[in-house]
Image 1 (tube, protein in one colour):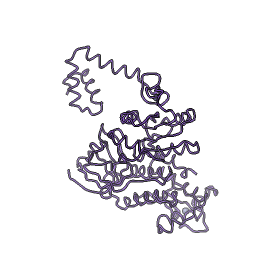
Image 2 (cartoon, each protein chain N blue to C red):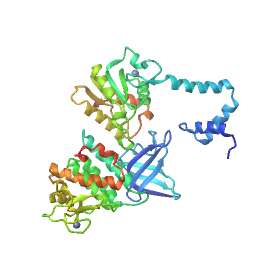
Image 3 (cartoon, each protein chain N blue to C red):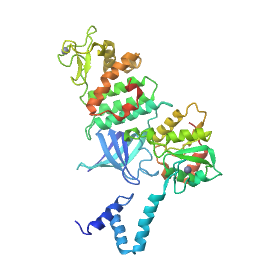
Image 4 (cartoon, each protein chain N blue to C red):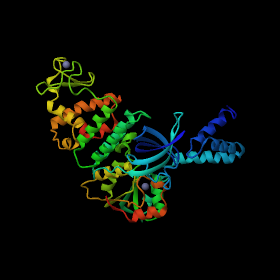
Length: 199
Length: 251
Ligand SMILES: [Zn+2]
Ligand SMILES: [Zn+2]
């Protein structure tokens, strides 16, 4: 069963680990790189290397960036006193594409999922609390996924912030509970952002 | 391979691929099931966002005979678990129920009574009765159903029944209560009050309306957990993840 030799098999195995890529597709992609020019192949290898070397979490909001601060944190037109809290950078991108929000974001880097061993201390909640005090944030918009764990994470944060006086809202339910934010369309996300309500 | 319909509670969700999930369900007809839900992460899937932790769904699935994962083809939402307003403990009690079902039941081992008790327990966790008692009732019924309930009616060694004038000790290692005659060396300070045992008995066999009205003192609550917490840890072979999140379990 070793038709390609171990070097090629290693490449196929690496491609097969990518999301949405099965064994057959992995073989096709590997075969493409066997035929293409060295320059083309090295350009991809280099692009992957550069991403891992340069991209890091923004120290302010934990969005991904290759600059010191992310584009949103560096933008002086954004209102630092309204924060939208999301689980993942992907959710931030989806909300930005909807274009209904002029404040800033805070990326939690996940959700509280005790059954999977993910507790609040593994997220960026402490940093969020510090940010709220430092920037005198007046409104926090909870945009965690509308799932039991996403809602639970928002509830945890709202409990932590009790007594701080910050207004806590959450996205309106234009999005069906139990689904994933990443797959919602722009209209639904824009509606949800406009129709947010008190937590 | 056969196509089956049943009602089930979602007790675990894991990503399977970019768009699919592996769902662990506790079903009324087949006990615990593990099934792939293809396309479950898309909004317009056959599951219509019914697959969230602790939802109750009507499901259709293709059962694999070879021991592989079943394939979920349909899930219609019946009911979503909604924790008490603002209460993390109520939410965490729901997670705890899912954790115990997942770790203490076997695949394809039907427990229809346990299934209906799980749904009733979730209603109690979401309702406004005493949460500690609802959780304890769930633990007791689960242990009884899987044949792991410790001896609570009398001494696990000599069989001497519980009596108001004798103070029993509790030992996980001995499988339940132990009387002072069998274990005269036992520390008297650790003895279980008869009233605490009466609460356990009421929870297990009494009418719901009766035990919902029970008033449990702080020392009794400590004793109840001194019996149940080590028992659950022993049966599970480890400490459940959710125990650290439920404050009343660690009095
Ligand atoms: Zn930033
Ligand atoms: Zn005895």
